[in-house]
Image (cartoon, rainbow, N blue to C red; front, side, top):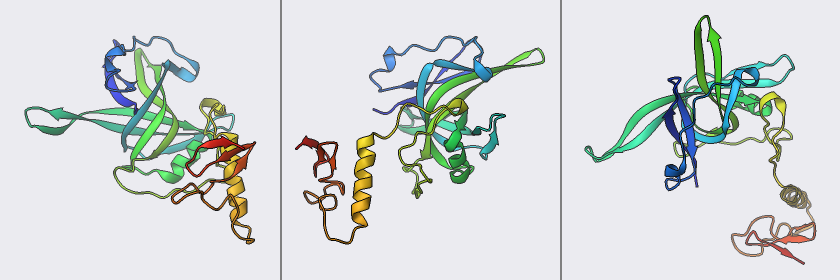
Length: 237
């Protein structure tokens, strides 16, 4: 199931993006209530809402460091709704939503090296509302604290380059605190075993000989008493 981007109006007058898990579940989601609180650094999480947004990079990526030395980057994302027009009997562009995307730590540096204005991207992260005061006027804007950002491959192709030590490391969130998610250790161990065996010129090994045609290159690797089979399944010896 793929979360998609939806829009609801807050009483403060600005649009806020909501995620839904499937079309069937849409009717079970209630609009988010008005956000009155101001959290740390002026950001207020909206019930920990996780969203995935498809759109285009609308500005160049800006990059800076906090007083504590934590890298942070942000850019504006334009996401245009596609809806079916029954009168025209075809898909048409709807309203364009504008969202600020913020990334921390390693992900911030990767954005600078990878994105340019106009790139089609997919952004996944936590929805936040930032509020501040300018004179007597109260301002607010919707932000996504990104967990991951990538090019939208339905629009074209790209090439990926691993960063040093980047395999299996989470990107982290606000303030440089790492997420709990990471690549499971048994997968990392299997890949390391396969890489080591591939560099050994002594002939085929269980780690490099697939169990069947089209099998995974890590087929047959022993990891913590478990064997990764040619079909990608684990089995005990």
